[in-house]
Image 1: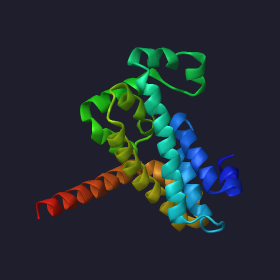
Image 2: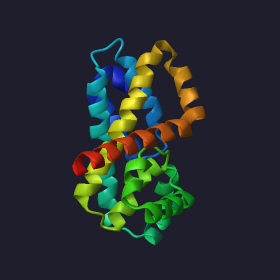
Image 3: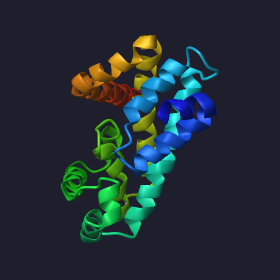
Length: 199
């Protein structure tokens, strides 16, 4: 389904699948992004176009959950998780607790870095909405985090070529290394900007 949607609908397929992945965490964004990268070798998709399409889709999904969060509290969300619909989309109370705790401890930075962490990546928008985190900052951090993550994975799929499936296995094994690499890049960019402002 994922590969067929990208092959048939191109950028629109990428937007739709990534938006869906943000709302329904069980859909693996890694598969979508790595395959989109591979697709740049034999379709009209380009690396930058696919990256922006994926980032737009991620923002749409994140915005939906942010709005949902504005109307919910943790107890209501847990009740939903234990309902039939919650079980169908595999929403777990433990994931809700972990995400809320992570957000409360690290605040805005969680929105940025959380976009690179499975499960938290999708659910982090809900506590942001619950705490009425400023929409402008939320949007900026969401777009920044997803843009970087999408660009990395799409490039991995592009350069892996026909070995894109094997690349997915490697991503699972090296996910936290990739996360550390992403964090380092973001911190370096932040430090450079801070130095430029002082200069």
